[in-house]
Length: 336
Image 1 (cartoon, rainbow, N blue to C red):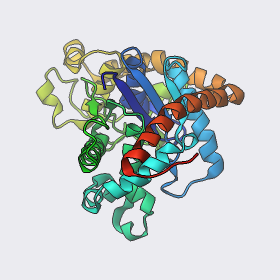
Image 2: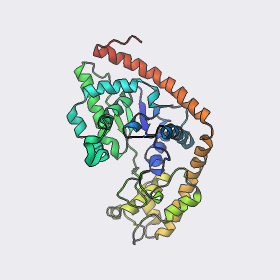
Image 3: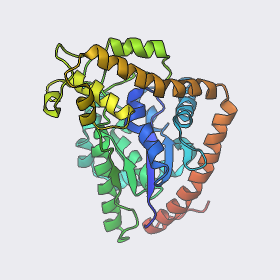
Image 4: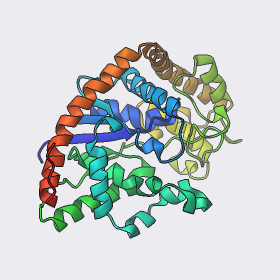
């Protein structure tokens, strides 16, 4: 496995926001010039909880529009939706038989999503990490860009790959995938609560910057973003107990591709009204053109569906080759 191949998936939740962009999509754009990249809209993951089928279809197209508007090339990358390639589901079942129940029970994200009512959660939500492992390994991906909340799932993917390779005496069949972690902090938090991740599900729209927000709305949201009574800090140590301050400084650093220390050097000691004005300017300059392009692309569903169709054919060629090998290793026969 000398070829470096990146795989990553984004759930089609609709109305993607700044956290999605800085935490994932911006990194995807950077990686497309360094690796062979496969980017997937993971629609099968989106049905682990009750969903609206019409909304799901719309959200898939919006996610693809966001990829393209943000700078992902449909020529350089394979861009498709997960349900179009059946090998994802086939390998997920195999991994259900490879992974151990104890591994599933340790997954903290299941506990968080299922909450106190976990007995009524879907089995799909419990074994979701096995499908995620299948998404990655069906393409024998070597690298996966991950945020803090997905590190445990990536470790599980590595464990499954090792166990499969060992159990079936096929050393190095599946690569032991490596994480790609951005150097600067990329976990973007709520503008209303610096201890909560920025999320579409939070009730207040002022908790997030949506990628389709116009410049006036972006400015309003940043001006109302929670900080504290102190000035902009000058030292990294001062950020430790100031989560809201740390968050907006991290956003400024990420959107401008600079280090947090550089932001503190430039704005340290100044009041937050000055800093927020500069942050608004940076966000408007970067996010508004993306939002405008998303709206334009959403008017052309034929084009967006064409991207999905072409991407699915390219992905399926790789996946089918690998699933046939996997079936042979397992002693299974596949006639079609």
